[in-house]
Image 1 (cartoon, one colour):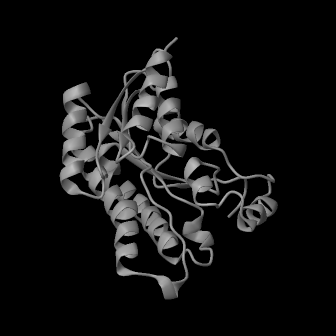
Image 2: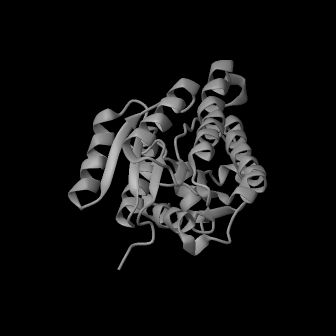
Length: 250
């Protein structure tokens, strides 16, 4: 019995750790061949590839900073050389940073918008060129911060609101080509990055868990199965949607 993503090739950006790594493992487990993109964490990306191949899947790690056009062109050229096609793009790469408006810098703005917004546009542009005639699938990883807009999150929330707007616009633009575009919008998720920033042990995280109807923070494996569903033919009539995967936190 074939798996739901058999014969599909997926590019997952920012897939060396956290949610991206879990998405890569999930897609591979559901039959896809996976490109594990990373920017700087080569060892972590190779570890994800090893986990996939040890369980019978196919994967390769490819380095690219998706905020840079030349890197994105190389990412898709290398993917085409390795596997001949792209069917699924998961735009997971991103940076989250919080701070008071008085402390905001131009460099911070450009760093967050460069990766979180320009990166999504560049990768989607190149994927759309490589999708087969029957179409393709773009899944953008957004955040409930796009609408919840927490204090000190003005830049980050703005980037994710932009991602949701891009999703809705490109769904209309690319729909006639059979390309579906959706956002998956997690709530606060316990990842290595969130731990390293001190978020998970903070009073803020405890407050978020308390106000979340399902009573806890998310885990990467709460997000990945939803991405795989959206990538599959089971979701063939779904496009232009922002799908909250957040335990009810909005």
